[in-house]
Length: 386
Image 1 (tube, rainbow, N blue to C red):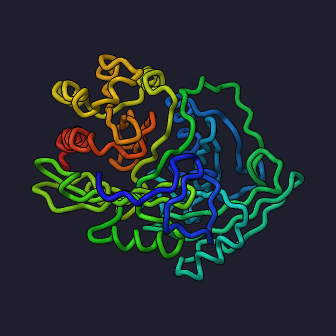
Image 2: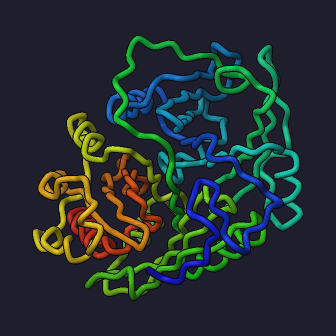
């Protein structure tokens, strides 16, 4: 599983030794995608994933150059943003990267302090602290660049009682499909270029006070054809986890190289969203047309009892049902987890979702890496990009 940093406890307020407290993060506030057609993208995420209409900003709210639809499911908020004219810089992002994540917004107590502390440690500013107000109070936001053109926005909303933030109104819609059981963002994975992983690990350590608590090398994440390396970064309370991937040498092109080619640079590879009932969630998603990676071979499921060991005694899910849905299973010292990965959610083979259910396990499915990446390689082979 790689070297794990000693932890003080495994509760919600897990503190990793070495983490610094100059940037207290309360959680993920929202994730903003820049997309070609926000209205249609919103319909997709509502229909396929069960997100609900939440807030809207556009011409009707006085926003002249862009439109944003905010979707919500439990604690997850997605903002889908499109430009309204050819002069908007959002166009440049979409032309280069296609639909993808622009902003990973982090909920903080003090957005001014977060900006000051990170920029004095070397962060490149994206947005100076800005106070946005309306009749419901104020939201303070500031932002810095991380890898590629991706941005971390710091959001302070303790003095705001409105729907989302100033400039938005409640989005009323008669069409709100039932949720599919998605609860919160478990982690978000970034892909960076050759030899850049350790640079960004150090950036998260120095600039944001994160710690590297899991490391996977190219001997652990490898198949017959390709390999990659990954390090998992976490903030002090363990609420924010950012694995960072880079390609490794292999016979053929890895999934990370494919991503970098089509995204045309570093960016967010996938969002891992948590559920309390992965069988119910995946069944609902499949029924709504969400496509997942092809299943691993029979031998993978035959080997699960050996890999899980004593955790098989406490496993609540039916193994045959997991196999029917192509759900993967892994375990560590703390428990087991279940996970499955969608195919890319847009035409470029870039951003996708992971659905994850943790039954005590704190890891990221290291025992599934080989089966997962072989599934991805089968998809790459069909695309002619392996």
